[in-house]
Structure formats: C-alpha cells, structure tokens
Length: 383
Image (cartoon, rainbow, N blue to C red; front, side, top):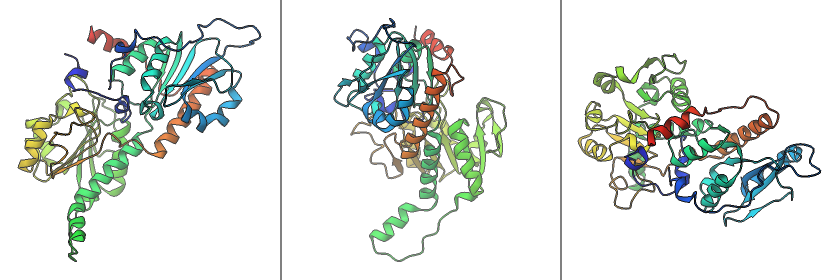
C-alpha cells in the first residue's frame, strides 16, 4: 500500500496547495477521458516563432493579462473557467505545445478535473509551474513525469510561518482564557508566557522551518532545527540530524513543530512514544502533512496533557470527516489546510510565475526547477 492510500482518503486537489506542497485524486483515473483539442506542435503558416498555449485559470489571467501582453507573440492564453469552459481570449492558438500554471485558483476550482484532462492531452507539455512546494501528491507526480520542465514554489513559507506564530501567541498568551473571561464579563488579570522565552524543536528546517526560525529568533526564542542536511542555519541556535534527536531533546522543547515532507520514514513519526517524550504543557504543531501524525495517539496524548495543546493545519483525511474527534477536542486548534492561503502568497506566486515564464521563453535559468529524478524515483516506488 502506498503513502497516498495509507494517508487516508483525499477528496480535493486544493489539499495539495497548502505547504507547501496538495493529494486528491489519482490522475490515472482520468487519463482515459478525452481532453480539449490541443495543437500538436505543427507549425502554422505565417508564424515566425514558436508559440505556446498557456493553460491558465481565467481569474489568474484576468489578474495578469496586462503583464502578459508583451509576450503575445510567444504565448496563446487558453483560459478555463470554474464551469470548465475553455476560451482563447486573444484568439491565437499555440504552435509548439503547452505550458501551464497550476495555482490556488484552479486547484480550488470545480473545474480542476477538466484542467487535469487538458494537461494530459497537451502534446508536449513543455513546462508546468506549480504553486505547491511538495511533490508527494499523485496528481503532481503524474504531471511531473509528463512535463519537460517542472517548477515548484516555496513562497508560501512566509504565510505558514505567520500561522505558526499566531498559534504560538494564542497558546502561550492564554488566548482561550482571555476569551472566556471576556465572554463571562470577568475583569481579571490573566498571566501569559512570552513566546520569546520558549524553546522550539522544528522538524523540517527547509523554507518553512527557516521562515519560522527567523521570526522566532527575532523574538528571542531558542530554536533547534532538525533536518538531514548538515548545513548550519542563521535561524537556528542548534541543528540536529533526525536520527540524533533523543527523548531528552523532545522533553526540553516548549513547542514541537512538524513541517517536514511525508516519506516512508516520517509517516506516523508523531506516535505514542513521540508524545510521551514531551513535557506537560508542550505545544504541538503540524503544518507539514497529515499522515506525519498518528491522530489516535495525538488525542490520547492530549487527554494526558502531553502535549498540552495541538495546533494542526493538516489532517490525515481531508476534508476531515464530521465524526473525527479532532473537531471537538478542547485542546486542539484546527484549520482546514489554509495556513498558506493569503493575498501575499498569491502575489508572490504570480511574481514567480511571471519571472519563470520570461526565463522559459528566453531560454534562461528558472527558479525552483525540480529534477526528473524526483518523479522517476516515485514511479519506481509505486511499481
């Protein structure tokens, strides 16, 4: 059984967005379905240079059209609406294959399946820009194996770091107690702890982990970063390899954050033993992937006070079933995989897309290119 199956049912492509890297449905389910009529790379008379179809959501296109117009001799926008209606707003058609921008507008759209079919029928799919950081989603794995060039995004790290700080300020600041006192009209002094006086253990010290560490260090907190790379970071007081983290290291932390990728090694890393090693009152946070956590173990651990509270933006099954205890547990703060969704993230993703589009058309180096080996290795594992 693969990680997608063990990770629980996935219902919506929007779930890949968040962190980061989004699973929802296997692209294989739709490969047999017909797609829109793409140009097959045959040159048309009167064209002096190659022109690429640009598959893009109509909301995104409307937002970026004025900045795309200078490229009108190299791209032919092919927009898709929420009702799965395709349109060519500039009239022109591509002559040499397709490029595509996969972002929140389309991943959250009812038209996402039509978008996936269009990607499958594109010959060739010359370049795909994803606004997700992760690659552990079946859909993105299929696209990555098809696209000649695949680029990812890490600009959501800023928003996700602020989500972590929000959860930390609320917990250590006794936000629940303050809200309760206000609701009861109880004018009382409620003590709280400064985040700057806390110690953090952060699993996954990449773009997201470092963004969190930078902000925490600015407040004066002590940060230990955990990652396989031996490289030091200016945003951590101490760096550790995951194999070297002991129960004592976990016990020293006032907050433990998971923002690492989902792999065979990290699945269910937060289990009974992991939580038992925490000190009473510890804050546990997960903005990585839901299957990093044994959710039954988390609920049982919260009932024992280790950790004292959990703030989670991702769950094993998304959307979360109505009968999940995560909805109602008094010591769980839950958000629906939205830590990355801000206007700032959208703006930064658009800027990266435009920058990479210019580089692609000019044959220049692009940002966040993902090597084919990342997708081929996954394909071998599945076979």
